[in-house]
Length: 329
Image (cartoon, rainbow, N blue to C red; front, side, top):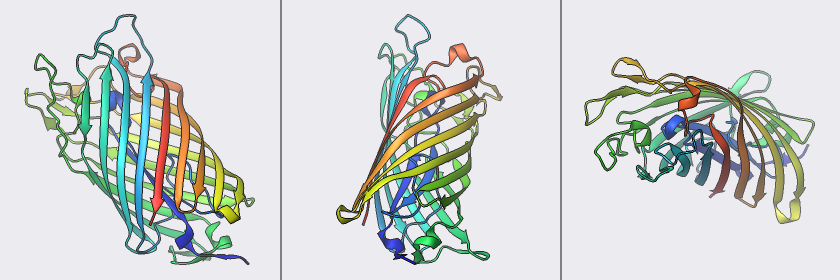
């Protein structure tokens, strides 16, 4: 049985800043090596970082929105979400992360564009597996062991340092255009993956994000609606060039997203919330300890509350372009 050491694995940690009006966020965890299980672009898998390793990470998520009216007004045009991350493998089963998002949000008439660093986050993932019983993810695994069922519990919080009270030229505040929530948010989830038929990996992930009420400078009280996600993915290893330490994978991902209605001044806010199903086909290439991923994400089914008024919201994209770069040190 061929042995592989988990320290040769390249780990991808993904933090995605996407939202209705660009204010929510979701985290995803993944791992891959030249052999063994594969990692999708957004769906969380369950391998932890190798002990004492460091992960450097960058992600770009560009969203171009459908135009619901002919006028060039203050509705959403496009958004770009960038994420800079640093991870550390405390043990073979416990990994810690810190992330700094940089968001750009642009409206059609450029009357209320915002750009800058948003709320940073701290995050942890706890990994375990099933091998004749549940056990912690070990420091070393054979190739066969890496194809077993693996699981992870993960969670994190944001730190409200982003500017939540950004106003337009007339002094009006739109929380959806802000760079911060004003209060911490909390997220937690569960992920699992299983390799099969040598080249395939199945991945499943479920997560929940809770936001808390914040009072803005103009007196408005707003609590963003909670997010509930179910992600699933199928990864296929297209080919590997061992002597060049190169691997290329194809991914197909599906996401169900339930956005809760925002609560404004104690009442449900109009034009917020709904149900969305996305698909995301993509490719991921690995060279030595570096990974580059690229995919396009489409909403294929949506039921949004007050849909005609939700330009610039999740579910109203023409397309999202997802690019990731990561390196394990």
